[in-house]
Image (cartoon, rainbow, N blue to C red; front, side, top):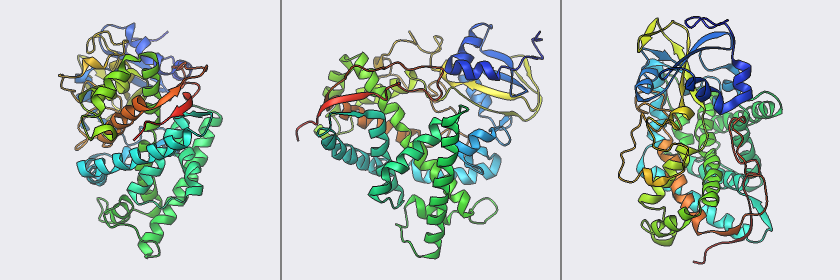
Length: 426
């Protein structure tokens, strides 16, 4: 039997079986936002809430080095990635991403490329009886982000690259065929981008000097040395992969518009506030994007290792313990969100979105810790593409639109099929 302070039963298999629901269900059974358990043979504690976010993202408490499991490094992040670094090494590498992903002009350029690619694709969808929106969105975004980063992409290869970027995300958290596809996809794309970096450095391939490819190729790490070509490829993938992963949120946005169609009219009336009919949306589009990210399942939790014997709210956290932040549970915590299992974008207008409350992609400050630096890109792309979804006319045929929480990462089973597409005029 488990001791409250020294849990003996390993819960790794129940986690795999229950997915997103495992941690919130366990935490509902204990008083307060603290749970003690055991995962992968290690003592683990799980926390939730803004105070917990600040605790977990303080590198004096929790560090990532040695905490990211090998299956995740070999699929989602890559070996030697910024996610696995701490301290000054992390800050120097993170500055590379901040320079590329948080510049408003750069974000606007990426959104413009993506919406143009979407409009071109939508015209093609009209000539097909039906399309799977998840797959089509991944291809649209992949084409746009490769152009934006300066990665040369032959049109004949675009679909395969998009499929590999999706596979890396789709297979990181599950054993079996999806996981092995993810490993193979990462090997292919690391080899591809390592060759590109080597060619850029040799001068045989030219890319814009301010492009992500050029910036990563000339980046010098904390030791003053350039990244080796393989690590540079890893970090380029850490721009391409999470951007393409916005296709998950696009499928969720379509799901939300189907289930709660009143949002369509609100997005249509709001969407022209920024750039007319082709704009990227105003306050309601922003609220809708935030609510999609809050309501639907994306990352179940993040974790690290306790760097010393710690105490949180009077509970001891032993050095080396896994420390988990319950992201999905926090985004559905009634203490933070009224009617948390109701989809309602109206909760956001007029409310400041606190960084330590809404945590679909983690919490903290991206400039000093491990919060995703691409969150602004995610919101901007989702806002713009949600407006375009609202403007697009289509039929939703009979299909399985369930979103099983046991599957990590979750998505509509069908990928959200649309038929009889009619792009908006003009």
